[in-house]
Each structure stands twice: as C-alpha cells, then as structure tokens.
Length: 207
Image (cartoon, rainbow, N blue to C red; front, side, top):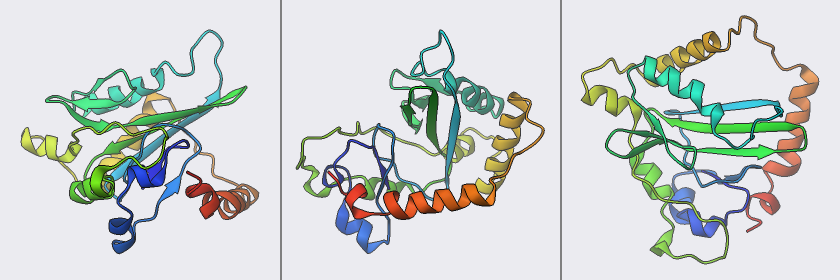
C-alpha cells in the first residue's frame, strides 16, 4: 500500500490485515490518495522539465495513456481528479504529481489484474473511522481492465504480456528508439535514499 504524502496511515488502511498478509505500507513524495499495489497493477511515471505556458497540473500527461488504452479497445475517460474510468463508473487509474521549481513528476496506476478483494480489505480502515486530520482518500468503485476486456469478448492477455504491449505502444507514441539505463552511481543513490528516508518509520508513519 502506498499512501499520499499528507495522509495518515490509520485513516487509510486496515493495519491488522496488512500485517497479517505481509503488505508493506509506504509513503510517497507526491500527494493524492492511498493505492494498493500487486503484480497485476501497472505503475507509470513521467518526469520532465516544466513547460512554458502549460500548467503542470492540467492532466495533459494522461492523454498518451488514454490513447494507448483506446488502441486496445478500452474506452477510458478522464474525470476531474485526473483519474481514468471505464464505462459504468469504474475507476482503473488514479494519479498524483509533484512539482518543483523546474521539474515535474506525474505518475499513476493501471488496474489490470489486481487482487480486488485484497485491495478493498487493505484500503478499508478498521471501523471506517477517521482518527487524524489529514488528506483523505476518495473511495471509488474499481474494476480490472482485464475483467472489462473479458466481459466484452475482447482479448485479455495475462498481466506481463499486457504490460509489455502497453510499454511498446508508449514507446511508439513518444518515438523512443533507445532506452537509457541507470548508471551504477544512480542505483547507489536510489538505494541510499530508500534506506535513509523511504523505508524509515519516521517517514512512512509520520502522520
């Protein structure tokens, strides 16, 4: 489970359920609501310089994601919170952003074949009570993209194949031909940041 920067853990998750099922709870740098992650949930992220004359929080970063999903016959719509929905009112993608003076980070999820029962259990706090004043998630009905494809008589490949197809189509959209891998010093920096901040209780349970 990953919660937003300004959320309180006790307001967002069932702690006992997460402990029982070895589900880690971590806090991200960006805002937004709590999300459940497993191998059926794809995460995407766009990082770039700020663009003159363009609002960094406009939701434009979702347009390529929508185009690629529509090419797979998934008729998604973007709603006002910069999230993506299927027909019938089912959410399949939530997003969040972090903007600095010169850079932007936008990221989101794609529910493809996640364990929906565990998702609901993990993200339902005990007794449903709000214990602390903090940014609250907005509960929404959800559905896996794979379920939608199956219900509508469309191809519904397993997660790894769909994620590979999605990545290939995104590369085509942006005309990406070469991939730049992280250097060793980049990996070391990421590991240091994880160790000194993002894995520490002082950060993850600060609220």
